[in-house]
Image (cartoon, rainbow, N blue to C red; front, side, top):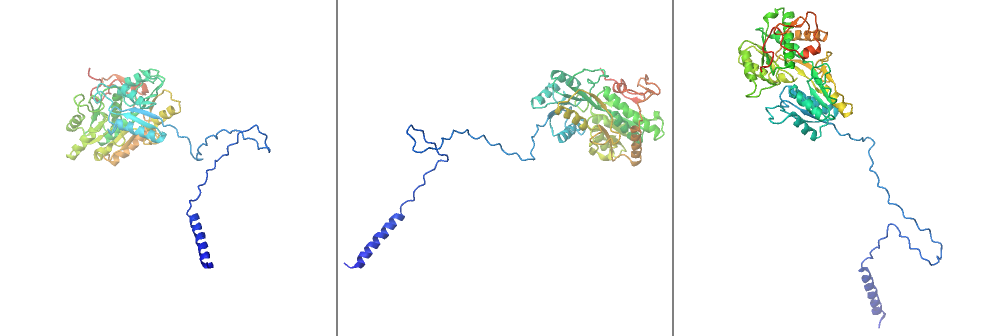
Length: 445
């Protein structure tokens, strides 16, 4: 055999061996325990000294999640409840309270929950106390009753839940000098001295009227509504006599009451019809004392029909927007700063019962953070009259007091002697309209 075939045969064997080796699967790695398990001790002598058996260790404590240095604990916002006698968007009394609640939400970081239309006509068979309890069940830690009409309910609720702070807008049950003091440890009363706002409204009306006849569209008859209507008359009479140099007896001021704070068909007189009656009988300025804007709306319709007439709405700063051309201005409430103060004290655990009857901030009666009562002039107020209204406001800020004698009641009985200045108690509980005013002084039984 030649060497070449032998060499070729050997080469083929080597090549086949290499090919078979390459085709074998790669060996799988054996897992290695992360932590060696110590061997069990035996009684046999150790050939060499083994390292000490490690003692069992406790599982490591959970690692806390790192908090960024700027993060702070989030407080639970205070939830407060509000009962509104009318619709929350009535452009009057209830909307002023609703927006005050929004003010508190913004300033305090609180949360408002509310129920509106809290009155027997809109919610027959349901009481304000029940609705307040419902708000409390939904998390409210304090309750605001927003109407004088809820006085009894606010007292009942405060007695039933003595640990729940109660704020009643108007009312006198927390007033030690008042006639209905209840001495409840969780009930606060607050009311703005809207008497000043009504005086300004009366002044604007007297400076504008061409007929000398002012109509006052009143709600129901009680102590609050009498003193506010009387204040409008006092402001009108002052500006009529001082700024226009006219005789007081030549100014006619008539009050017509509808029976509630707003229209309830079939229950109250229709404020739209009352406004029409004023306008059709020569009253060319209507001052509203109700929660809604029917007086302004009807006046605007009459002006569009060619009459020279004007109106003054009530309660809500934005009310003139309903009919700007005939609006002389609006006296309004700003409840936000007071509600903020009381609810902040609730949040801090420092709530105490008080009675507050607050005057405007005379440094700026339209300051949204300080003044509970304001007056915004309307587009319908002529510049000359507006300048006089500004002068009148300055007089009030300087100490002018129109609740000063001699003043008689409507039946001509003396209310204030010559030079006598009325106390807050005398003004609050005014028993009748004043001499010179036409209209009913007490409710019909």
